[in-house]
Image (cartoon, rainbow, N blue to C red):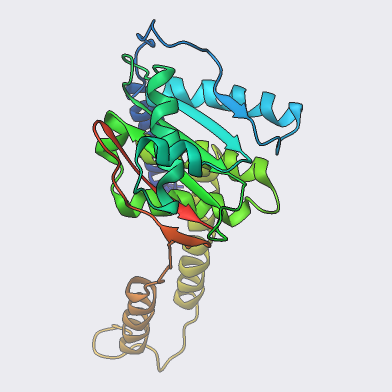
Amino acid sequence: MKQYFNYFKWIFLITVLLGVLYAGTLIYQASQKVGERTNAECLTKERVFDYGDVLTEEEESKLRELIAEREAQTGCDIVLVTLNESLKEYAREKEPDVSYDEFVRIYAEDFYDENKFGYNKPIGDGILLVDNWFREDDGRIYTWLCTVGKAEEEYGSSMVDNLLDEVYQYVEDDPYKAYESYVNEFYYDMTNTGQLTESIPSWSPFAAAAIIAIVFIAVHWSGKKGNKTTMATTYVNGGRPHLKREEDALINKVVTGRHIERNSGSGGRGSSGGGHSGGGHHGGGGHSR
């Protein structure tokens, strides 16, 4: 019995270790929760402004619920605006020489400021996506991601591009999925552990331990079977089985020397004008299609 315990104790130890690591991840995420929203001057509680009429009422409702959850987790206001109108006259009245790709930037920054969005204070921590479905005179459709406060500090041009790539991957075929991705990607980026804890099921430590156990038993069972095979020619030089020892060394090299490469990464679609920085206290960038 003691011999079997010596074999299987590593399985129990691995199971406990994986469980502790998983629990530690959950505890860390819980410790990162932000406080209550302190901006009492915001002019609206609405977060989904579907002026372009690209979502159903049910989809709007689901997005509002998701946004409310993610705002409490990130400590940022999260706003979505869809349009289907030219912004040329609006933008050039404010900035006469502004280019087509930044019409939507001017609108986004004004919309954020005029409504006094911000989780911590007016025009404070938050993010706003404006997706204008109107094709401007240059033949392009433009989208802008406006970042403010700690969202601006977190988001460099590459992160803006990655988030907008995720939106553009779905927006033409499934606007709801695109805007859901916008909200969730922002959450993952701002919390760091969000992606990890949501992608690892609670049963994964036990599944990993079971796989390790099967491999462990298979390897050591074959070793035990070899020990029970005795022949007169096996024992040489004081009863030390040289052939068996060399075979064990070879097995150990195969098991411990194996390395599995895993590719990770993400791509996006759509034409990018991303990484542009807005004026004043705004950051962000834009894409076009």
